[in-house]
Structure formats: C-alpha cells, structure tokens
Length: 337
Image 1 (cartoon, rainbow, N blue to C red):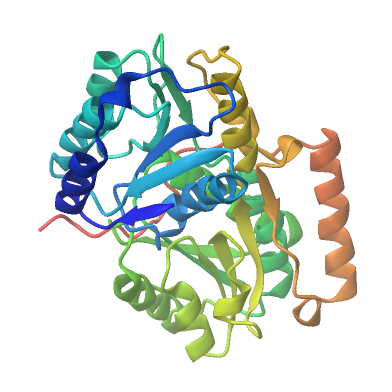
Image 2 (tube, helix red, strand yellow; image 1 turned 180 degrees about the vertical axis):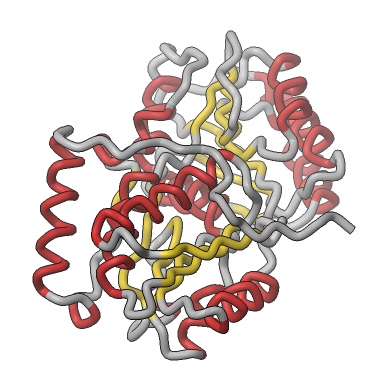
C-alpha cells in the first residue's frame, strides 16, 4: 500500500508507474489494482473506514492498493480520477463522491471498464458506477438508548459535520433511541459545516456542555476531547474510538466497509460486476454496522440488558429503526461567511 498525500504527488507517482503493460489484461490469479480517492484526510473517520477495509485486503494479498487523500472540493477530484484512470487503469476505484458528485460521475462515464464504487447520496449509474453509504442509524439508535439512560440532566448533545441526509438520519436515530428510554430527553444539535475540523467540533461540544448536556454524540472528531476535558461521557462515531477516552467513551457507532469491499472485489474478480446500490452491506444484518464494545463500567446492568435486547431484535428483524433524514429540529447551523 502506497500513500500519496497530494495531487502533485499522485501525478508524479503515476507517471513513474505507467508502463506498456498498463492496458494489459490482469492475470486471473494476480491481485486486482484498486485505487482510493478521498476528499478528506484519511484521519477523518468516514474516509478512514473505507481506507481501513481496503488496506486489510491489500495486506491479505487480494489487491494492490494505492490512494490519494485530502483532494478537497475545488475541482481536483476530476483531475486526479482522470489521471489515475488514464495512466494506471485500476480495476476498481473506491472513494467518496460527496461534494464532488458530478465530477466523479463524469469520469466514471468516460471509463466504463473500471468499476467506480463511491459513497454517494445518489443512485447507481450503468454500467459501472455503484454507490454505498454509512447506514449506521441502527447502532446510532442503540447508542441513543445508552445516552438516554445515562443522562442526569436530561440533555444530550450531538455535534455533526454538515446537515445532509446521511448525518441527519443518524442524529435523529440517536435522539429516537434516547427518547425511547427517557421520553423527556432534550437534544441539542450543532453542525460545524465541515467534515474535518476538530477544533470547531470541540468548541461546539463545549457550548452544549455549558447549556447542560452531559452525554455527547461525537459525530465529528473533536467532541470526545471535550467530554474528557469536562469529565463527561461520549459516544464515538464510524470506528471504535474508545482509545480517545477509555474512561469516558461509552461505545461507538461503527461502520464496517469490509462486507462491501469484499463483495465488490469478488464481483470484479469473477467478471460479474454491475452497477448497484450497496446499501444492505452497510447495515447491521450483513455486518456493515454495529455498536463497538460497550464500556460496562459506565453503564448500569439493567440499561445494558435493555440495549442488548433491542440490538438482538434489530439483528433478527423484529425491530426496524425509523429513517428520518430531515435536519433535527432546533439545530444550530453556522451561516456561511
């Protein structure tokens, strides 16, 4: 696995790796060539989850994986994807299309022999553009149950990135879960209008604490730091973030891209890949979403039992968490400067 930190680095590296064999058919037993295109730094949890799954496949020898992160939203995504597709001809390109939706789809249409698999709020496009998303509203509901049972002030806080449907649905599920345990719980929701700005997220969390919140949902990085500083509890997001606050993180709402990645690799390797919506692979039933281990030292036994029982109902299909993608009522959203 090679990390390419910038677009210029990507261009130089690609120029060095192009050979006459770049358009040759990959032998059946050879690892697939996979490229990752990430708008943010991979330290940002959303892209980090995709990167982790692909890196594991590379370590297992199933793929040759390279990537560029921190591409941004100013037009460089189209340039990077075009250069990679033209010069390196990977079998699969994974990435996130949010904020770069039209550009990504234009490049995919120009290279129909490459499987483009992107996080997207839109639908798939024939013949080669598949979509996925982090359908983690189910564990978010369970985490909300924990928050509802743990709050003493009856005020919980959520700090999110941008109020798009994908973030709204997990925020609403978290609130629904909390209110299922304690109906009079009040939720304070703030957005920072950024996907990766830990300082702003921490500031928003501290403002919620000042307003009475005593349990926080860290949809964005920086919130757990505020909880640790104020000796409160928090719920992590995307990956298990217990290491960021071992005595303060109750659990994390986790997304696992491995089922999606393995399925796509199998499809491409077997010559059966088609464009599709990969939603089901990011949900609890297929192992794409889950609660991280719960810190039982922070959770009363009766509450833990209630949450685990509801988790079992979700896994078995006996309970379905509502999907509400509207911006939570009363959300604080910064105005654009």
